[in-house]
Length: 170
Length: 166
Image 1 (tube, one colour):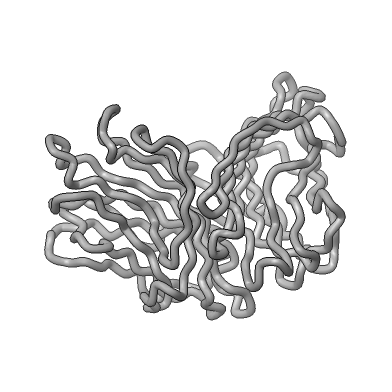
Image 2 (image 1 turned 45 degrees about the vertical axis):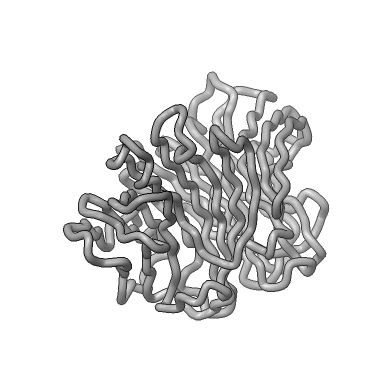
C-alpha cells in the first residue's frame, strides 16, 4: 500500500510535442499525474492530456474554473482536455513554468466513463496576464481501463527541464 | 506531496445513500477521501459528518459552472461538493478531500475539497474549505452520504486513505 512512482519523464529536448506514459500497470487503485512544463515559444499555451491514445478533442469535456489577475474569477467550458496553462511567451519571463496535479480515480474500471480532477497554476509575475490558478476537471467518453496517458503541448513544444511524473496509488 | 498513502477502506456505495468509515486508525498524519460517484437521481450533494456530528460546520466555497462563477460561505452541515446524476449523462464526480491533523484532540478540523466534472458547461468545478468547529476531538469516524437523500449509482466508490508526512 503506497504511493508509487511508476514513471518520470524528464524532457531533455525541445523537439517533441507529446510525451506518453504507456503500458500503465493495472495493479493500483488510482493514478496521480504531477507535471511542470514550460515552452520556448511565444504566446501562452496549454498542456493537454488524453488517455489511451485517443486525442480527439470532442471525446473530452473540460470545465475551466480559473482566476487571473487581469480577468479575475472566470469560468469556461470546452470540448478539450486542457491540463494546465504554460506561459512561455511572457516577455522577460521565459523560464516561468506552469504546473498541474491530476487525480484519476478507479482507472482500471471498464464500466464507467473516465474523468480526472486537476488543480493547476502558473505564476509568472504579479502583474502578468500569464499568471493563472484554476481547477480543470475533465470528463471523457472513454470507458475502457486507462492504459496510457499522453501529455502534449497544445501548439508549442514543452522544453527541456519540463517534468511529467505518474504515480500509482493503492 | 506526502510520501506514503495507505488505503484504509473502500466503500462500494452503489444502492446506498450513506455509510460510515468507523474505527479510523489514529496512526496517520492526514486523511484523504476520494469519491468517484454518480447518483440515480438528477443530482445531489456529497456530504460528510465527522464523528457523527450533524452541525457545527462552516464553509467557504468557490465554483465554476459553464461560463459562470460563484463564491460564498455557508453553515450547512454536510455540504461539500455536487454529485452528477441523471441530469448529466455519463458524468462522474472525481473529488478529492483532504482532512488534515485529524488525530489531534485540541484543534478544529478542516476539510479541503477539490472536485467536479466536465459536462458541456452544465456541471461544476468546485473548491471548498469546510471547518468543523463543533468539537476538537480526534476524528475516529466519518459518515459519508448524499445531503438530499439520493442513492449512489452502480460502480460508485468512496475511498479512505491515510497518509504520512514525507
